[in-house]
Length: 177
Image (cartoon, rainbow, N blue to C red; front, side):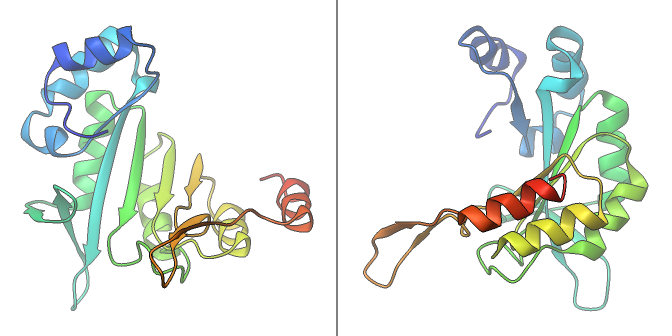
């Protein structure tokens, strides 16, 4: 991810050995790029990131540019369109929950799963391996993304790295995760 806007840029990255390219703003601005990339390298290599925030009175707003640019349209119709255009995966990023370590937005994960049939990765909110287990036991997703759970900045701006304990790893493995 990060600024791929043309098929030539995508070709260069794939030539370097990149297996997947994520698109966000380009998916909004140049949706035909999804089809062009999928036709050339296969749908499994084309991932669309859908950043969203919950609206105060219900519903969702879509964003791009790291949550700075609000995008028009219905989030579910957008994801469905991306699937029809050839995207092989959707990464659903809750801007509201990102870095909070309060758990995934399970309600949204369930709604999005009803809208699309391609693999779905949920991002934003993981604070424990229990959050990952909860998401995957409730929703058949391809991935549960966790950043702050493993790497975060401490009070002295140091990078701290946290690994699941042996017991947590075994628990995840025994739950077919």
